[in-house]
Length: 475
Image 1: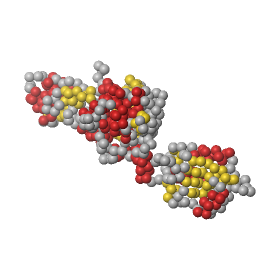
Image 2: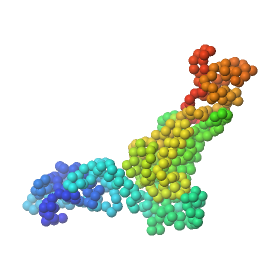
Image 3: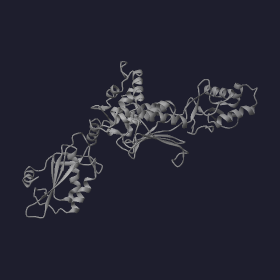
Image 4: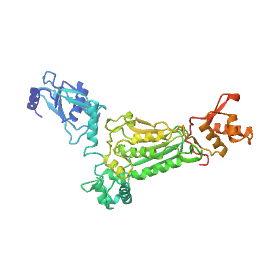
């Protein structure tokens, strides 16, 4: 840039792509404007020109340049900003010309964690609506982490897993029955190659080697003693493609989640089943693998089982400006990694309608548990499951005798009931002490409760119980 160019800029004045600052004392405001230029079509900030257009410049030392460089380090992602020094004739003063170059693909730049926009000659914080649109454009742009070329060959992928995906997709009705079991055709069908070269998404879905280039293809699992992370009962860290890690996570849950007995209404027979609905757990894990931010090399999907809860975490924030509160109501399905999510869809593991999180809530409530908590903190998203009692049917961890089931049968129809009424029902051939022992046993299991005292006391079914996340002692 020449002094003649500066004279032309001053003549035209400030605009959507030009701003003047008197000195580096306004460097923070200059950086905000550069951020706004980067989020538009680029622009220039000239330091050393006053508000009235007077070209005065300033002394530029090494310390001044270090200060400018330090400010530019506060951009995310790194800002393509060039620095040009323009000496003023007959003076020791110089102009600093900071040029923000436009980017080819939609990219959202922030300065000190905030995105900025330029409207006319005014710089301001970008409104949330536009910010969300930027996120959406960036996530669905042609330049995402998942569709970046991986630099691997087809031989580096799990061929059997690819063929299994084709078979399962056909069986689920999500791939045509005429789909040929050919690896190259499958990769192209799934959009996992760009100009015949594998993408990062192909590694996440079907890779076989992950270190040192893909450490983020990781699953961390732990069973803790108690309700904190102070002591491990079991912990594992695995690298693998997403389908293998999903299988490993489900097996880990099968080993460490308690199996609760369900007493069927009407017959009060014990039926064993997992404490949490398997489909809800799988749905939460699939969401974690599909929507996490794989651009973080140190990221992972984490699974933690405590005595009082189960947690599933994935690195990365909620995409597209979604809030935690949105996850329990209708919201659009706009996955962060559409290629990865599409292959999970072909496998029949996800739907396209954005109901995955709602489905998790519905399944847990149907099973008698509280609604899971969705949380976002410290750059990660988590789902927290809590066990709870069933209003009906009741869950127990012990088998009952036929007479004890008969007592529950009576109380399910005629609750509350006095002791004498229960004794008449089961037959007075048993002793009073034996019946009281049965009732006390059911009370210890928190299946029944006693209200009142003396002859007027009544027994009734309890509305629920609180099973722990501990397994039987036999384990």
